[in-house]
Length: 148
Image (cartoon, rainbow, N blue to C red; front, side, top):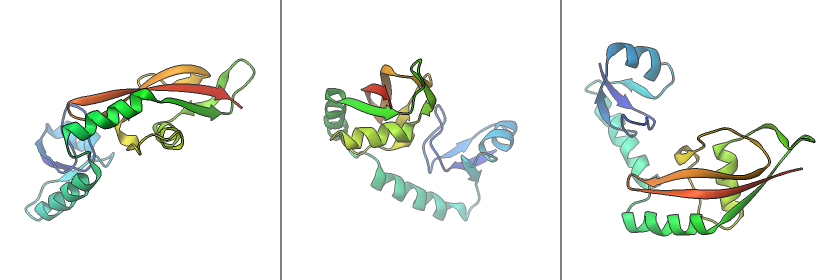
């Protein structure tokens, strides 16, 4: 099955890429979740629009990505969330919360879709979160979650 990706899918591709996947994976996972659309000849216009939007949003060069990685890793981001008595949060910290906290602490504006929270953050304390800035550059955000 030939599909056009509309979102980044780890191990498969980036938005605007045309990929060939097995029928079941495409029909049961990618299409229902909106990660892809079916490829057609008229879909080439959609590919161009997606790639143009991606180019304007992406970090353009490797040097720029390394510079932003240095800025992000030098920050200690503080995030206040509602918490119970035992230090357990009501809910969990999301990628959007992390992106907003980085921006509020004087760091660069990050795309929340590039922030990877491996294990859900559900308690106060120090945590580490990875962010993919470029295919070759990743950075680690030091996150200090405190209860309110």
